Image (cartoon, rainbow, N blue to C red; front, side, top):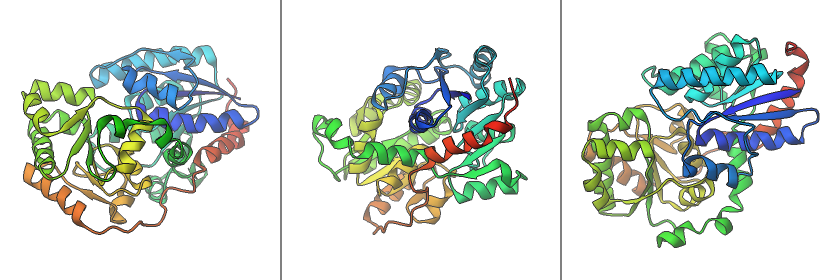
Length: 368
């Protein structure tokens, strides 16, 4: 059985690396990897392929950045050509990016069955492009690989039949376990930065809701600056965020208070996460990785798709309404006691369950 796996952004490279290992070990599966080029800088893309031992993509579509409609449309056209050429039994898509939606749409219109890894997540905020992508992808998919019981409940509420839903656990947890033992020996980043473990806050900011709104962006960075007066704040700066800071005239002020670094690869990020005393982020993946590392997290958004972490008390929402609110939320979490909640994301074998499920449904896939 041939599977075309479609990726384009750094969280998808992590998920695909875990699943690819299991697909490679499964008999009778040929995987064709397609990289849309949604993330294309070396430190946002190439380093992940190298570190994660992800095979070189069979197709690199080099779509690049652009407005949502433009980018998704270009991806849709290019992915369709690949699918027509390869004629796979299944298309596998990951997460909630424009690459996810374009891959699902291209496949379903060619009557190629779609499997969605990380299905069922809901923030219930349709203003977020990620929410639109994940909802539409779920409804276009034939098989839904849900990471948590909450995701399964979301899908059932929307009327999906149980036969389409597979509760497999979280493939990012698989990756964290697999690479976690190698992090210290293969990532000298803390030593290079001259920072001690458990002596800093790690922050990431990249969501369009935050970067495209100057008031929210200013509240976040001014708030982080207030925190940095008491404890160092390390922030790998996403290209979108760097451009926004320059666009709104905030770049010089930001550089004065925070320890800004270039985006880092997966192993370096795990090292930063596991040694932080607190993580502040607007990233869904980083929220989970904070939990995997048992580091408390503040999410710089009004809502989260990972509601389990909030319910467990391991994550706190901090809408960026003011710098004072951001600083108070972060400093309050640093001072609060924490106990590790029960495991929420499976036992670290999600990718194996996905490979076995795809083998199990292969006979039901329409011939191509």
